[in-house]
Image 1 (cartoon, one colour):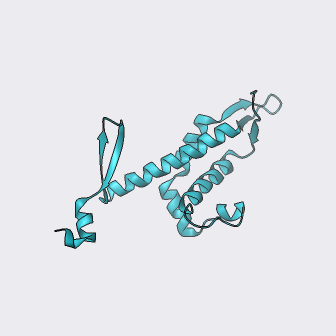
Image 2 (cartoon, rainbow, N blue to C red):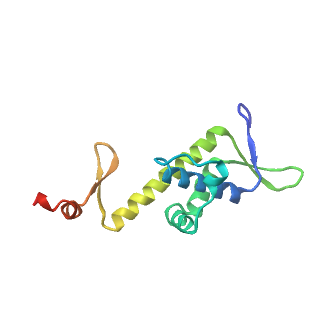
Image 3 (tube, one colour):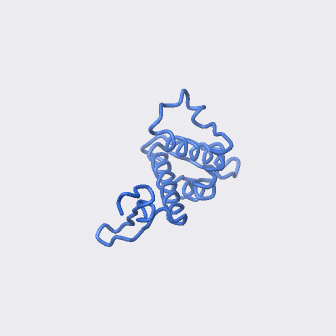
Length: 142
């Protein structure tokens, strides 16, 4: 593990939970004023915690993290240790954000609020608001 600074993750479960909260809160507060401190950013109300658990599950995040972090067995203790660097942390946070957006869009499609299709030209999914919902909002368009 050379060419960058590596950091030992002391508690993998706590690391995942904090990173998940950070992404969830930052996404929800992007257009609002910045929180007063990092600690306040990681505190969630009961409804926020429920929404986070439904939008970005711990298990999804654990799978993402395990695909990025470096692990090795400590020769002295024989315990598995997990390491991370700045680049890996950035990739993890971006992957959490992408997963959360994907889950939100999936829920909106399943709830019937959005339509979706795969666009072969862009090699990606496209989304749009259902026509019925547009007419409900603007009845004069008929």
